Image (cartoon, rainbow, N blue to C red; front, side):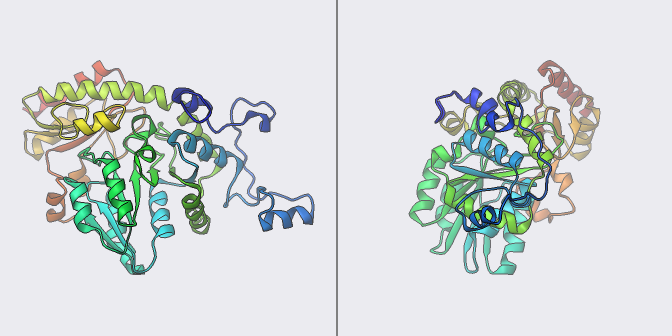
Length: 395
């Protein structure tokens, strides 16, 4: 049950919304105004002093956005949330809000590459040291890397693209004992499959472009957590001008309402496809924490509602054979995102061939054989037939 006494599926549809303020409208309207006006000078003064909360200017906040933030906070079990114009803006905004010159940041290395690059290559310009730690054994890697000045630890759960897991309760305890905050990028799980705050994390972040919005038609990001941390991040968010526009917030709200039913379908399809792929002789390795053979299976059973909607796998072939597999697909498209209603396949090794050194690609396990599949809402039989078509084309 949620704090309001409603079950999670009901909270997805109704959480954070107050219809009485819109004269009974069933859906939250798109409020497009950039400036807002005050009836009196006294009203402006009360707003400026913090005595009264009013709308002022859409770069700081707007009605449609605040509903989206309230719904996200409800779904994550958070006191508050702030929505950004993209997932990357949410990551960088959190970095910049919480870190100061002389601070130390830890980020697990199996994750979105821009997240890693900003930590390792950009933050040092402002005197913050970003260090990448091995996601294959994250608990011990973080334990070894923690310093007295470590302010923040950021992990993806599951990781991208190998879908590795970490014991979040143990990691949160470790971070807090060292005086560091734990932030979890839960983009690949969504609150349907994982609730990081309930496991001890301080913040949960999303590229809301993905599962939360779910229709491949809006860029958005979000950070959820306790009110004091979100206030700090919101202040940076305003300074950066990283607000998500009202239309984008409306699309995010629309996607959130169907999150539960979408994930129920794609989670079930992903498990079926992972089981099938694991039985194929042309497949060398399947990464999916919902499989009993996966190293993260026990953690998934303890911490997640399911294995999720992504499946990564390695083919027994050279790059030419992998290309034949990819090019033979007719239902599954080749694309860089995930979490939408359409199934998408991505070859990260090729995508990052010109952005990472061969040594970095090898260290991160981005082989020529590795593919990541985001399972959408197509009939699972058609998706299975498409994968079989690809395997047959490998020769």
